[in-house]
Amino acid sequence: MSFIKENLEDVRKNIQIAAEKSGRRAEDITLVAVTKTHPVEMINEAIDLGVTDIGENKVQEIMSKYDYVKPVRWHLIGHLQTNKVKYIIDKVYMIHSVDSVKLMDEIERQAEKHGVETVRILIQVNIAEEESKFGIKVEETDELLRHASCLKHVKVCGLMTILPKFDSEFSNRLHFRDINNKFIDISKNKYDNITMKFLSMGMSGDYITAIEEGSNMVRVGTAIFGQRNYSAQN
Ligand SMILES: *Cc1c(COP(=O)(O)O)cnc(C)c1O
Image (cartoon, rainbow, N blue to C red; front, top):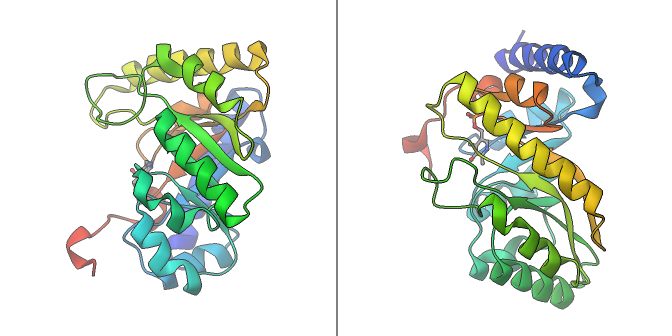
C-alpha cells in the first residue's frame, strides 16, 4: 500500500473521531490536502484516492500545476498579492487568505473583468497577533465584512486562521475556541451577502484539536504527503 493511501486513511480516521467528539460527522468536515512543493503525480494519486480539495499557498505553483492535475477544487491558502489575483481568479474554488479591503476590491475587479460570477473567499484572522505578518485582528473583522457585503462577485464564506506552530496544544485550543466564538457571532449577525459556512483552521500538527473546537475545514499537508523538500523545487 502506498504511503499516501495509508496516511490518508489515518487522517480520515482522526477526522471522524474528532468530528464525532464534537457532535458532528466526518462528512461535515472538509479535508483540504495541502500539496505545495509536491509533484503532480502525488497530487493525482491523492485525487484517485478520493481527495476532492487541494490547497496551494503560491499563485505561481497553482499556475504551473493547473493543467496537469485532474479535476479538483483548488484552494489558495497562502498570502495573495493584489497584482497576482488576475492569474488565479478563474482557477480557484476558494481564496482563504483575504485580509484587506484592497485585496477584496481587486478580487471584485478581476472577477468582473474575467466574467467570474462568484469568488468564494475566507477572511484570514490572525489571533496570535504578534506571530504572523498576515491576517487581520479579530476586531477588524466586522469592517471587512461590511465592505464585502456591498460587493457583487466577492462572496465571504467564512473565516480562516493559522496558529503558530510551536504553541502548546492547550493554548492552540483556546485560540481555536476564540475564533469559533467569533465565527458563531458573525453567523448570528446576518450580514447581506455573507455566509459563515466554512471555518478553515487546523494543519497537520493541530487539526484534531481544531475540529474538536469547531473547525469544519482542515488544511493538511505533511500528515498526508510527508515532509516537504523546499530545496528540490524548480
Ligand atoms: C503549508 C500550509 C498548511 C499545511 O501545513 P502542514 O503542517 O504540512 O499540514 C496549511 N495551511 C497553510 C496556510 C499552509 O501554508
